[in-house]
Every structure is written in C-alpha cells, then in structure tokens.
Image (cartoon, rainbow, N blue to C red; front, side):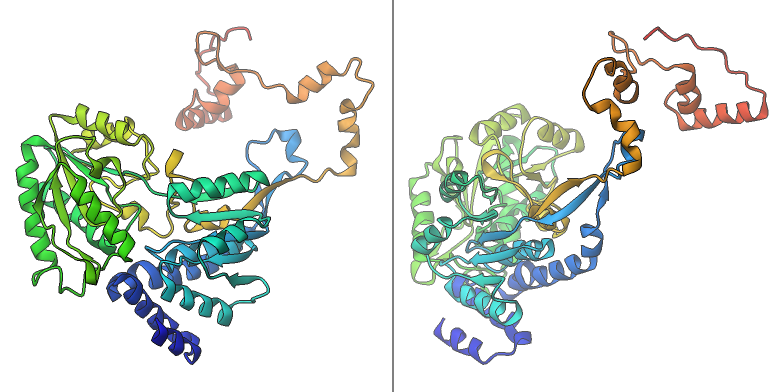
Length: 488
C-alpha cells in the first residue's frame, strides 16, 4: 500500500486507472481483466453515458394523463437536485460502488461526501486522489476511516444517504436516517437462489453458475448463494462443474492470475468456518491457504435447506447444491429460505422459468444465466424488501439523486374559468363536475360500454376499425349499424 500511495503523489491523472488496477490487485488480489471489466472501464463508460444523455434527462417532462382543461396550466415535471448526499461504499467492488453512484449525484446536481471501505484501503487512497485532482473539493470530498468516522458522518444532516453493504449496517443507517426523515437508497444482498430443472442445458448452467462464483472469488452480492438442482441431473451437473473448472483454470486455480483472493483474514476465517459447520459433503475443491487468503471454488452437496451454507449468505466461492424431487419443491424452498432475495437465477425451459418468476420475488432476474442482469450498466439495479431499497445505474442513477418536482403555471386569462373554485360555493358543484368528473366506461358487471361517438373514434378498441369507420363517414357510405348502449 505504501508504494502505491507514494506513487500517487507524483502520478498524472491519466495514469490513475493503472494505479487503481494495481490497488484492486493489492487489496483483493483481483485480476487486471476483472478490474477493468467491472471497475475502471465500467465507470468510464458510465461517465460518458451520463454526459451524452444528461441534456435529455434534465429537460422538463410534460406531465401525462392530464384533462384537457388542466393542460392549459402547462403541467410539467422539473428535475431538481436533492442536495448534499453521503455515499458509503463497500470493499468487493471498491471503485465501482463509489464512482457509479457519484456519477448519478453529479449528474443530478448534488454535492457529495464519499466514504470508501476501510477494507480496501489502497483503493480508498486512489479514490481520494481522483476526487482531489478531478473535482471541486468544496463540493466533493472523501472521508477515510472506519466505524467511528462513519458514525460521525451519520450524525450530520444529509439530503440523501446511499449505502452499499450488508443488512446489519443498513439497519443502523436506516434508523439514523429516520431520525431526520432522510431518504436512503440501500443496496444490500441476499441468499440468492439458482434453480436448475431437469430440462435445463446442464453444461451451460454449470458454466454460467461457476462463473458467477469465481468472478471476484464469489465476493459479489448478486451471485447465487445456493443452487437447487433436480435430483435426476445432480451427478451430471457436478461432472460438468468439474470440467468447466478445469477449462477456466487449466493449470490449477491457486497459481492462476485470473482468480482473486478473499479481501482479508477476517472474511477468509468466516468462510472457513462456514465450511466447517456444514453437514454437506465437499465434492469439488476445498483447498485453502490462509497466508495467501486463498479459497478454492468449492462445491458442497447438502441435504437440507437448513444447512448453514444455505441459511447464511456466503459472499465467497462456495457453491452448495441442494437436490430436490421437483420444481414445486424448488420454488417452495426458495421462498422459505429468503422471500425477497436480491437476485434469482432460473435455468430450464421457458414454461419453467416463467413459472419460477411468477411464483417468487427478487430484486432482479437473469434467466438461464448468472449475474448478468447486474452487469448491464444502463439497466436499473436494486433490491426488494430486505435485499434493498431504491435502484440506480444509467438513467436510474440520475433519478436516484433527483427530486421530480411537479410544476404548473396558471395564466391570468384563466381566472374566469377558475371562478368555480372560490367561495361562496352555492350552485357551483354541478358546474365543477361538468369539467372534472370522470365517468366509468364499464357497467357493474365489468362490461365495457361505448357510446356512438366513442365507437366511431375508437373503433371498439381497434385502430384499424376506427380508420375504417372514419373512411366510411368521409365517403358518406357508412354501413355501420347503430349500436345499443346502456344508459350511464
């Protein structure tokens, strides 16, 4: 860390991405490819995307669904910055999870204080250098530190708090924010299920799910926490995982430059303890080296949804597999383990994956894939229930830090039309209803009612039919039979 910090003092800004890659390597053992893929290039593209689209985002929007009379007020939605925001990052993607929300805050016009994770200290120093050399420090700054510094920041009044991390800290932040009614965006995690049916492409499922647990050594809130597999294909699924693991790391995982390390000794020990406490059987991997914070991708065959590897979020390269008899059981277990996980990964035919989505809930879904809905930088991303509140990414990041302010302008010439709203009210209710009352277009049995004018204009719901009726009217040859309409 000392060498990188010293180098930063004398480094041109254009060289900082390379320094950031080195910092991710030092803090997480992250491969350079993964750092550029998920951190540096991601953030650069996010900045370019926001810059290109910001003029469109900030424009006032015409308010939809307005009555004709109300349109005279020019109703519109203005986008205002929320104000001063606090962004608290985490260690697994220490650049991305600070810079991406910061891009949204800047685009929305907010000022921001950034609190990077103390578990990735080298990256935190790089982020501070980036902010100090690239931004106005009177508007944007970095606070280094751990729990005491974060606690002090939470004692301040903010207009928005954006937090990425675990549920326990999120509860503390939400409770503190509630004292001042400060809005929060919470990007958390969950015990995310993958479900592999007997109709799935077994090799493809094994390859994609293994990738989801080897990227950043499984330290990814979006990756599957456990995989439910139809018992008819469990053996074949494990065989495919072994084959894919060899394909990913032909010379072995431990010496590969393409596999990250666990962030620190505390997290490594936590994962080791999870393996020790499971009642399952290790069928792939299991090798460890505490001195190098190395934990091999490990597949564990478990026999109960109450196993510790399923009940707890591993946040590491552990792949518990739970065999089940059928899809009904798989869906029931997924809902029992965690009703509102951050992600869901169904593998099977369309009928099966559609049913899984219909009968479960999650922040996002990648059908027949792992992670990828969380890897599209312009697709809004967020949790649901206890896996998070709010969303961001792309346009969503701008919206996250903006207030949609409803605005109207009432011209003086409308005063005669508005006289109905002023006291005295006697005799005015009927007049008011003439311009404002909405009448249902259905009867008490739910049958749609169309009067002759609506039928002519709408063509009973068909644009083609409407065009035909208008043509007939214009030609004076209408052969449309009168329709019977019920009295309103």
